[in-house]
Image (tube, rainbow, N blue to C red; front, side):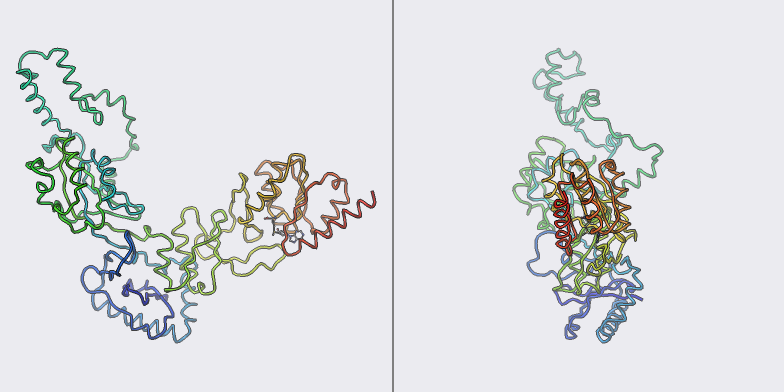
Length: 561
Ligand SMILES: C[S@@+](CC[C@H](N)C(=O)[O-])C[C@H]1O[C@@H](n2cnc3c(N)ncnc32)[C@H](O)[C@@H]1O
């Protein structure tokens, strides 16, 4: 049974998770065991606020939204301590083996994603939906501005169907008030308004239209609005009320974050901020949105909001006579999927350990090159790499040994994801099928290959002695007259042939499967030798030997001629 838990001598106290999903922060000196501390029994466990934490979201800030009973906590601590003690005493060996068996390489049982959930209390302005974008750009400096979190948030029930607004007595488009204002204005200027008897003269009528024309909303020009606006996306057929409700419930939540309202309008004194103009404004009953405010306003009242917000709201009130605002308290929850790979690994790996952040991507495969110190956490690391790089990455492998064999294939261990090592790589506009279990591939050589290709011309004939699956030979075939490609590995030759067909280059390439020495002798003793202008040899360890051979062969041929 795998049991893992945090033990970390840093300002974050131990957080207890489910009994089967404890975290391991292994091998601190025994004296550090005393740093285990428990979260309070309050409904929310507050992570200690480390001093001078950086601005923005952090796993060291916020609250953990779940907690265990004191008995459960006690049980967990005893369990953790006994496990850790056992691990330390046994040199961590046996437990590690157990872990590996249990993990089956996918690390799923190692990471308790719930542990990465953090709740942040923030304040938000509830504003009319139609004003939200304008206000967002005006107030940007005072908004939350957290990476990947939209400043404009949606919550369930924030959308009111246009047809429903009048039933709610709302003045969503300001019709009632505007109508009244307009009539009053007409009466003041002309002594009468529409409906008072006489028809308005064409001039007055035009004047009225001009006043009513609202470039944003086409208030009175429904047909014009229809022509100008792009058609609404048609909802999928068969999507019923059920789906609609579901969509509404999901509002405010995506895969990595969720916004919930916890306290409705906490701004009693809007008049104090916005002046008498605000007095008597009825509550907005149309569609609304939340503008998430900077974290420093989390517990501020209306009176503490800065002047810039006041000015922006006042202008919005002037422009839209019905605008109204609310200051509300919200909960922003960030889930495991929100955090970046390095943040998650930093939380999981022991303090001071270098966080593995680089890997080579070969098609859908991420290839790690883990250090020895990482090996006890290899499944954990691989799972995080997989989670954080999906869907592009489907498999995570680790290079387990230096390349020793003739075919230059790597010894790879699949740590997470699907086990297929057959993938497709795109390089230089060409597609290459590769099976990392049987052939050589190194994406890092792409630049070097490009450097060589830049020297080739249409009149060249290229001889690639160690061609592998053809990254050089096929790229050259796109440019030059003819390519002779050879490899000792039959799998590589098989893929080379397939790849030449896949890229429609089979007519320009001739493929050989023999030892490089034989290939050189054969090619240079045939009539092909007369045409070859470029020879590529990519076999780092033995290339010099082959170069010598090539030169000798060429020299002897020249002597014969
Ligand atoms: C470093 S890889 C380079 C492959 C290819 N040029 C590339 O960049 O992907 C070396 C290749 O040489 C092949 N090889 C190794 N020894 C060989 C030999 N004696 N004769 C021919 N090919 C050989 C291996 O199978 C391997 O595909």
